Image (cartoon, rainbow, N blue to C red; front, top):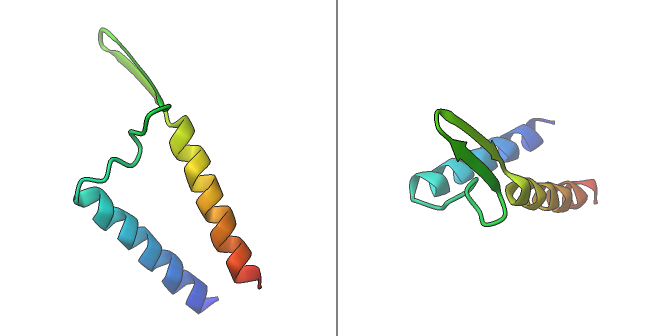
Length: 64
């Protein structure tokens, strides 16, 4: 359990570092963004799909 938490923490830190370096996570083509006047709506469709695939692969590796 402890090993898993450390790996998850390192993965989150790595994603944060990539975002600080300019990787546009969360603003991928296919994400829905609507801006009208003082209202804005953002729904990260493609980002959610990519994160789902990535987490599925990572968890499949941990099960083995």
